[in-house]
Each structure stands twice: as structure tokens, then as C-alpha cells.
Image (cartoon, rainbow, N blue to C red; front, top):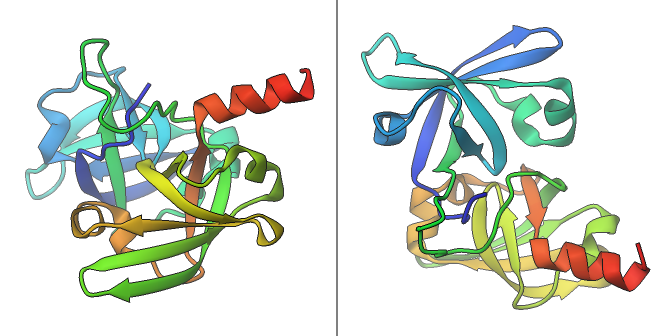
Length: 203
């Protein structure tokens, strides 16, 4: 379980094809010292297991993850290439404060940035998501975009879109500040909203 508060904006060093999956090697000096093999990390919102802790050619600490076919087919991790950046967050402890919201690291779908308005150091981003996710997205509710805990500003139900307003810190400290129109992101809707929808459907 995670909180959606990103701890490191990390660079992808290598993406290695290991059929049927891939190995992702990510420079992560900010958090590597506190990790062990087998720990769970949210990589741009997708829960992955640390399989190796090492150093890159520059001597910086690196983490290696394995992503299987299911993960690659349902997230943006399949499109990662060396040189790109990802958001990293360690799994929470029971004694931690819940600064964001409850995030499972199980991506519900891939969204697309369809609009961006920059006003000084602030930005408003508009995302389009798969139609089945819309009942779980509400104005003033919580959502995780690439693993970042955000509050939904408003929802356009007919267009399957929602807006979020980003403060300067979020834009600087996460991948969201680097997004351009047509870029894709991992979306995880609010955990409570999922259960409410299931109850309403009688499932």
C-alpha cells in the first residue's frame, strides 16, 4: 500500500527485454540505502518488486525491477525507454502518516493528457480515461496519476475527462511537470470509490 506522495524522481538507466517480460534498471540514490531485495516500490504508480540493488556505471545506486506481460499490457511501463524518468515511492508502514490517500499500486487503466494550461508556476492538466473508470472519478475526490496523489478539480462525464490543478512543487518533483499533450499516464482511481461502485452494482 502507498500514499501517492512521490519520494524520488528517478531516471531509467536501462530497459532490458527478458521475454516474456522486461527488466527495468532505475537510478535511485535517494531511496536505495533504505531498501532490501523483495521490497515493494511504486514505479510511476505501478507496484513492482526490487529484484536487485546495485550501481550504475557512474557509481550511483540503482534498482532493478521485473515487469511481466500483464503489467506491461495494462500500464505505460511497456513504453519506457532509457533516459526517461519515473516517480518512485516506497510502500508505507502502518505507523506512517497518510499524507496523500490510499493507493494500492494496481493500475486501473491508461489515461491521455488532452489539455494543459500553464499559469505562471501553476498548471491545470486535463486527462481522458477509459469510459469504465468514470464512475469511480468524482469532483473533489482522490486519484493517482503516475502514482501521484491528486485531487480531482472537475469531471466532464460525456467526454470521459477530468482536470487536476498542480502546484509548483508537484510539477518540479514528479514526472507530471514534464508531460505534454498526447502523453500517456497510469491511472489508479480511489480505492473507496471502487467498493462503492461495486456495492451499487450489487456485485
